[in-house]
Length: 313
Image (cartoon, rainbow, N blue to C red; front, side, top):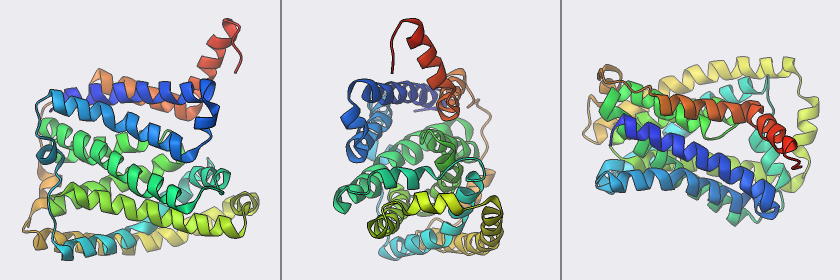
């Protein structure tokens, strides 16, 4: 696989994803309103194109994606790394809320009656596995062959951010995507980023579910009293926590890299350069489509066309 094929896969994934979302909303509203079922369909749309591209390109899936064993001590340190990186993700979550609402909280509140087991399976297991296969597996490894590790890290993080289709999640997903790549490089295994992603999603699902069981309208009530001054105050605190957390996180990454016999792997991420072009027309079109959905421009276009032909939503 190379970057050109990866860009085509991203474009196809984006078109299928948008098409599926609108198909559910128009023709299967009951499915669209179910967080678990709609999320499963979304994740399948994300992972199937990249899986098919890998198979038809003749790649050995396990080795190409990087599903290799890790030492138990490294697995435990991934947990510590996750904890130390949480302030950075929270920081960008807060920054995004200066302009947009907390999408995850709003989504969780609308699905407060879902049994926790189904919720955790959806966001804590299925989403991490499928999204890591696509972003840190397929896209990262493909772009790395073409443009080197640094470009691949940034592009795979951008794709990971855009596939969430909203600015709130995209803000911290981009940072999370970079950290996940560094974990993959430190361990040499995609399992590290799957575990990292799963711990983050699972812990947030547990926290939000617990809060909503006590007060189903907790986030709506909270949103009504949070001011910009409050957000700026929180951002200031998390800037300090992020500086401390990321410094310690890097130390943990270095330890994991040495523990896995991959000394120097992290420095190669910054130093590895390849001159092949990674920014292609399919990639640009896919990014524009994602941004059109995120800004609402795509919805306005679709409703305008539908109105013209006498179709109402």
